[in-house]
Length: 356
Ligand SMILES: Cc1cc2nc3c(=O)[nH]c(=O)nc-3n(C[C@H](O)[C@H](O)[C@H](O)COP(=O)(O)O)c2cc1C
Image (cartoon, rainbow, N blue to C red; front, top):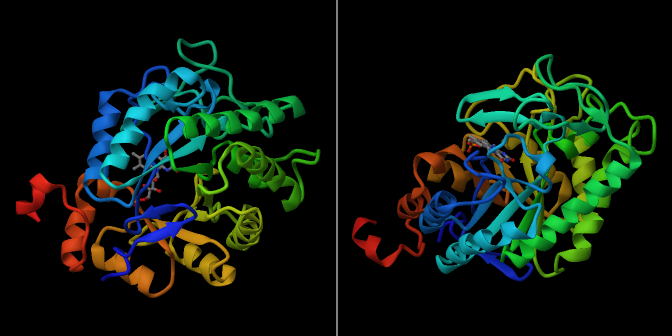
């Protein structure tokens, strides 16, 4: 049996293999609601054999959307259709997971595929964006309003309320989106966070916002179900958040009982010079895994496109879980193909058996 296809138990949940569908915004929702489109999209990846299917960045509040088509979990009415999706994912033997997100200063856009444009608050469908400091992401984007302490508390509570809805909807894992320059990452990084109160300045202060969210989420999320946190391991900027900060943070996350750190990078500033290539973010995951010495599970993501590449990452001890994004858009049956290549067992849907 390959490592990639050996099951992994995390608390009360067992992933049938180590492949997780990386969260990917589809921008196909209306007012945050999922539709049949999402059921088929996520359902296909579950039938395709992924160990867990993680729904895209799902807005914990309407003003937390990146674009108008983001999924939402800010009201109870969202739960019903999400439940259809989780039920289907479970029926295939996969684990339904959801990424909880707030876009911060990168919100209020119209986005679809490769196209994106900022929406100003006075435009139709636009809204005011908020962030730790009143610094725009780029010259064409809105300058956010600096959050008050009251805003901070309300937003943290919205993460917890969203987690409670996710539980009602049948999700078995939540991931707190603290990467890619969105709200939580804006607090972590010293570039967008210039606050002078106890949420800015030292790393202890900049991480406080995230740790308080974790405490609030844990108050509503059952202790036997896993929680993941996605981080940007580096801003790819001299004066930004870096891998040493991420090692420090991961140790604290382990101490807080977080089960998985999902290691991505970048997104905080538009001008970062990112060296992109096959497995380009793996060195960050690998460093965290080695320094953490199994205190929590480490996920890696970024241009992992073959069964053997994924298997080698695991057998070398560079990561515990493989998050796959675009390869699973190209081929939702990647896990079924990969299992065949690695001569491993994965439950092939009965009617597909003649094909695998
Ligand atoms: C269409 C698309 C949407 C994405 N949306 C999200 C998202 O909602 N949340 C997130 O954390 N990352 C998002 N990402 C990043 C992916 O999860 C993944 O980290 C990235 O694509 C690198 O992995 P890959 O090379 O396997 O695609 C998105 C990527 C793509 C291509």
